[in-house]
Image (cartoon, rainbow, N blue to C red):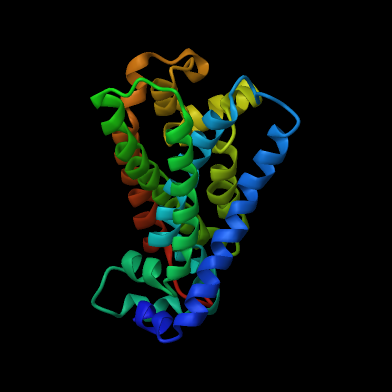
Length: 254
């Protein structure tokens, strides 16, 4: 329904998609400005940072496209319109994710994939079948991890009701963090996004294998192939949090 609504005004769709593309591209422009003054950032070259940026931006863009509307859940909890979703014969999670589905978010996905394509084309890497296979796996698993963060943040809004900005700190803030090398951050920060909120498995850890870089925190080599397990674990925990939050919902005025 939302796609048909969007495509009814095609010129508006094109302009908003281009605007989304341009707005997200400014993040990479900032990186380019940094490299106009330095040759390396945390020991990483421009092409390597572009590789991290492309993986993070494209993975997050896919998750934002599929389930980014979850950030509006707090508003529905506050005004009671979540009750409308509860009486429909469809999963509440699917309805909340599809609410005001914004096809313009394809602009972020496209921009991230273009930067990733640029990085792959200029990096001097020895591509093996394993590395080639790992590329789509990183994108899909990164999308899954970010989706889990969106769902967990939405579950938290059942309790906090007005916590969309807290959720954004871990979603939008998380993808911005991953656009830079782990070597520019303190060890405590890297530990937090590796063992507490495992965003590092979106790109830092598997990209270390592809780029031939040292693993964050000295992790073993097999950690590069752990993103599927991490994504499944994150989604399972987010699902439990969502069910707990939904069971706690008592509508407005309770």
